[in-house]
Length: 74
Image (cartoon, rainbow, N blue to C red):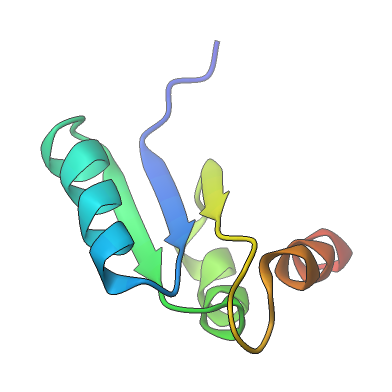
């Protein structure tokens, strides 16, 4: 069993990012790395090495599906 310690969240809505951070970091004791969009995430995911990525599907610019495809390609 893998114990989660670091999670990345890719979400364009600031309120949702805050709720996720409060629930998982403050309430769950996890290290949560927040990204505002798919391009920002693609640049930062390798450096933060998350064990789980929470990915919004509907984002402006690079949407969640395209972000996931690029993540898989990398």
